[in-house]
Amino acid sequence: MYLSDKPNYLLIQTLLDLLHQELHLLIDPPDGTKEHPATTCLELWISQPNFTNGMYYIDPNQGSPADALLVYCDFTAAPKTCLSPLQPQVPVKAWLKDSGTNNSFHWLSSKEKGFQFEYLGPDVVQMRFLRLNSRLTSQNITYSCQHGNIQGPGEREPSQELHSRGRREAVFQFESEDLDLLPLRDLAVFGSSDLTQEFGFTVGPVCFS
Image (cartoon, rainbow, N blue to C red):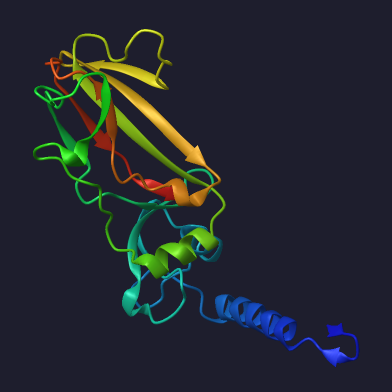
C-alpha cells in the first residue's frame, strides 16, 4: 500500500474501484438488458448462471448504458461474447475470372461487388475494452465452391470438409490470444485470371472469451 513513507494513491484507487465493482455486482447484478448491461457475457453468466444462449446487452467500458452493445452470448462451454458481421455472406461466383494478373493474391474487397466486413455495434472504445476483458478470440470462415479442387496441390487441408447440394465446403477455424488479429475485415484469394471456378465464403461471428 505504500511506496517508501508515502501512500500509493494509484494502487489505493485501483483497489477501491475493484471493490466498488464487486459490490455493484452483488447489490445490482446485471441482467443483460439495455438498462443493466454486463461488462461481458462472462460477467453476465457469473451474475445469472441460469441464463441460456441468446442476445443480451453488454457495456465493456462500463460508462453510460446508452452505448451498450447487443451481442450473442454463448454459454455452452466457456462463456463467449460474439459479434456478427453485418454482411456475412460473400456470394458464390467466379471471383478471379478476368482479374488481370496471374498467380497472385486478390483482396475480395477490391473486386467488383466485393466489400470489407463490418460488425454490428462496437466502436473503437468499446472494442478496446472488450479486448481488455478477454483473453482469447476465435472466428470461423466457411469456403464454398462447385465440385472441383478446393485447394492447390501441396496446400494444407482445411479444418473440416463438407458436401452439400453439389457443392463442397471447407471450414477454416481461427483462434488467437493476440486479440487484435480478429475480427476478420477482408479475404485474399490466390489464383489466375483464367480461373473460372465459382466460390464464395460465409463469415461467422467473432467471439471473445
